[in-house]
Amino acid sequence: MRLLPLLSACAVLLHATHACETDEDCSLNGICVQKCSNITAAAARPAQKVCRCDAGWFGHDCGRLDLAPATRNLGYNYTTVTNPGDYSTHGNASWGGRILQDPEDPRLFHLFTSQFANGCGLGGWRPHSQIIRAESRTGPQGPYHYQQTVTTPFRHNPDVFYSPADDKYLMYAIGVDAGPLDRCMSFSYTAWPNNISVASTDDIRGPWSEFRMVVNSDRPNGIHATNPSPFPLWAPDNPTSEIALLIKDYDIFTSPQWDAEYTHVYNAEWNTTEGGDNALWTEDPFLWRDKRGNWHSLNHWMIDYVEHDGRRYPRVGAHLFARNLEGPWHFRLHEAYNSTVNFTDGSAETYNRRERPKLFFSSDGEMTPLYLVSGVTPLNETRKSSTFIQPIGTKWREFERDLGVS
Ligand SMILES: *[C@@H]1O[C@H](CO)[C@@H](O)[C@H](O)[C@H]1NC(C)=O
Ligand SMILES: *[C@@H]1O[C@H](CO)[C@@H](O)[C@H](O)[C@H]1NC(C)=O
Ligand SMILES: *[C@@H]1O[C@H](CO)[C@@H](O)[C@H](O)[C@H]1NC(C)=O
Ligand SMILES: *[C@@H]1O[C@H](CO)[C@@H](O)[C@H](O)[C@H]1NC(C)=O
Ligand SMILES: *[C@@H]1O[C@H](CO)[C@@H](O)[C@H](O)[C@H]1NC(C)=O
Ligand SMILES: *[C@@H]1O[C@H](CO)[C@@H](O)[C@H](O)[C@H]1NC(C)=O
Ligand SMILES: *[C@@H]1O[C@H](CO)[C@@H](O)[C@H](O)[C@H]1NC(C)=O
Ligand SMILES: *[C@@H]1O[C@H](CO)[C@@H](O)[C@H](O)[C@H]1NC(C)=O
Image 1: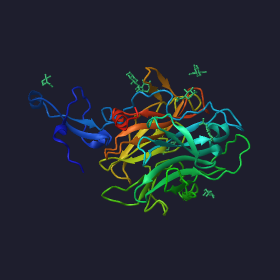
Image 2: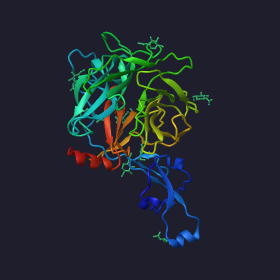
Image 3: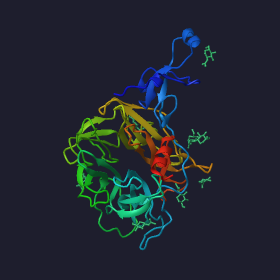
């Protein structure tokens, strides 16, 4: 619990028209406060309460990510390179990832991403995906440069974080070891279960331990285990080694420790079925706990801009939130962001696909989202995917200025 400074006892929102009653009405991304009003107005009608959004969020219910204009040619975008022996022409296509600040050198940023081997591009993701590490010395937005191949194919969908309780980096990913691949291929998940595994290392540059399976794809309750999003429950006043793990179709697990048994603690109360016009169909969840202890996720809200027999569902980003990990979770039926990006050069572009959302937060305890990382493909392009990074709100400017990287 935090004491609110006196200044924020009311919200100055002259044109606010949407009233709130609880912090849930503000998506738990802000608080529902008395609207500041002058004496005359206050006497005339009962005081209205409105949402005061945390930095990085906006909208009458604080349910929209406050994306700032992005700079072109940053992120990790190597779809035009050629490597000796490539089987196709999609270069080092990649698909979203996780940014980590170097523990010793704060001006160095690491990106763990899924890269598709053999030039096979996004269409060959299973089995060609492997995990690589790239570095940027020009700030968290990149451009990032390839450094290291972390795994062989097929390993995909990595999420990497530092676990204070273990003093280790943990990497959750899906996949199995593919063996040699002699041409661009594509396997169905029925032939190749995804299976979620975890590996650890003492050093961000590795070497990494063997993967240890934590949730396999053949569970009695039919859970199709993919898209791992782990979050350590560690806090300065509660130095636990417990880990929460959210996966596709909104199943949540907890484990007393990263390499112990994972117990299923929550499954979605809504219809997660794939396909049709199901407006509640999501994937690629990204889980975090905010400064107040509330839980949130960003999700790829199926489906993208131009897909699915030409039908257009520009939903793209959904925000879900809960006071407790075990729910109830609230699903806001409006987009948190979409596939249109404004650039600093004044141009705008709409992507064909924009998936795998992951946030980079401030480390000052506020959990302010500073950057959104996602996997994108340009319009009319399905294989030349890249990893795109967009700043959020205004706090990222201070972060880069303080680091001296802007
Ligand atoms: C104060 O309230 C009066 C009466 O509702 C209104 O006309 C005026 O615009 C308000 N002033 C401010 C600064 O909100
Ligand atoms: C990635 O690079 C390609 C080739 O230069 C370019 O056409 C595309 O717009 C870039 N994508 C992004 C998201 O920057
Ligand atoms: C592309 O990835 C390969 C590893 O698969 C690496 O050796 C090469 O340096 C990368 N090229 C670029 C331009 O990043
Ligand atoms: C992945 O899960 C499937 C289904 O449970 C299982 O048959 C397979 O052995 C697992 N693969 C690995 C590499 O553990
Ligand atoms: C869930 O969504 C699927 C896909 O649209 C639909 O076929 C099914 O009837 C829905 N189930 C329920 C219980 O609404
Ligand atoms: C995304 O949202 C912006 C601003 O609300 C809007 O201008 C744009 O048309 C939207 N893009 C899509 C693909 O819906
Ligand atoms: C892009 O900028 C325009 C003009 O400021 C704004 O109206 C629009 O909402 C922005 N779109 C997105 C997706 O941020
Ligand atoms: C994508 O393809 C459609 C249909 O062929 C075409 O109308 C549109 O101009 C294309 N867009 C881009 C950005 O190439």
